[in-house]
Picture 1 (cartoon, rainbow, N blue to C red):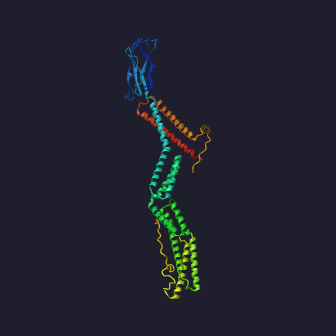
Picture 2: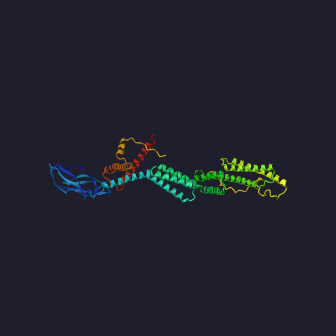
Length: 488
């Protein structure tokens, strides 16, 4: 008698589903035999993954425990149900055993279960959004924050320094305002340039602060001295010019490379005013001696000489009143006046000595002794010149026009540029997130029938893919943008 053989179709049962699904996955197993068979028994076993550390329990598999009879001419169909609601994620393999009349038939079973889609998709979208945010922050936000921090730091520093000259303060403040305006209009390179210029000015002041203050104190003292001369009815054009030059120098302190250069200018003006004062006092004293000298004892020729000296002194005073400072350090024109005063004083001295020889009397009262220091070549005492110790010196880009017809149509339909910016920003981010998330979801979730089997590694891979894909897209986009900008 031939041996009875039972055949099963399909040769293996394969199930692919999602963990937590309410509906059960059902597969139909069809049996046929070469001879009538009765009382078949069917057994289900636990299914294991490759590492045999996860199990799909047999209690989640539903199938009839026995089949009464399988005839030769009939096919016996029976359902095999798999409950995935409580199943773990992963790929599990095992067998369904069919026992009949002392024989056995094993039907392989393969079950692939993955986690539900919503959490992986949300995590992938989060990764893309995170990457987009980081890319945007790296491109604009970080630089904007750095510019803001630089602006506030410099403003705090220079506003806390009460001794900083107005020239430095106004220049630094102007650069900071320019930097803030450039930052607000997203011209970050211009904003950084403004901060650099402001920082350079602040460094130039702060590194040599003591030297700057010393030079400024000398300049302020000279300014006060010149102002006091005006109240003393000393208003020559020479002194007034020095006042204007000094005021200009004090207003543009920041233009000088260092305190030494600034101090040299102050010293030059200080020496000029001291020279002018010395000559002026010489002339005043000379005129006073001429006025105090009595002419009634002089011979007519000597009287004429005295009158010529007085006229010469008047002319010299007029010349001194109209004289302006020279660019030359020796002040040649002022030296000429001083020389003429000394020569006139010598002539007056000779005239006075002639009178003394004639009268042979010291106490006639013709002239007053003790008032001829200038006549004897002595220079009246003048105030010391205070000088600064001098040490060795240490466009909005035009926007390119775009001839793209699509953009022209959009500009016509949406004339408000703010609305266009908002629309394109929203559409750009939405498109980026949709395409990147869709691509990653397809590759890492839909094509993986056992997603979630590796636990956090699968989810972290989604997050990393979303973040990395956006970073790559941003890098390529920026590279293409720089290429376009470099084209003539």
